[in-house]
Length: 85
Image (cartoon, rainbow, N blue to C red; front, top):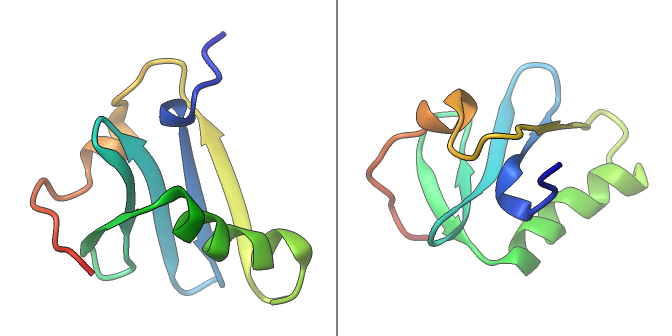
C-alpha cells in the first residue's frame, strides 16, 4: 500500500463550498471553490487543515481520500494552469 503524500486528496468545506488540496510532482496545490489553483508549501496546507481537525471552526468539515494510483481522476479535474499566490 502506497501511503506517500501524493496519494491523498484533502477536502475542506462548510457545506456550500469545498477547497481541495493535493500533492503533485512539484509540491502541494490548492484548488479553490472557484476552481483557481495555487501552489502551497506543506506548512501552508497544515495551517488550513489543523483548525478543521482541532474543531476550532465547528462548521468546517474535512475529508481525506486515499488513491493507490497517483494522478487519479480527483486530481485530473484541477486546471493545468497554476496561478501563484
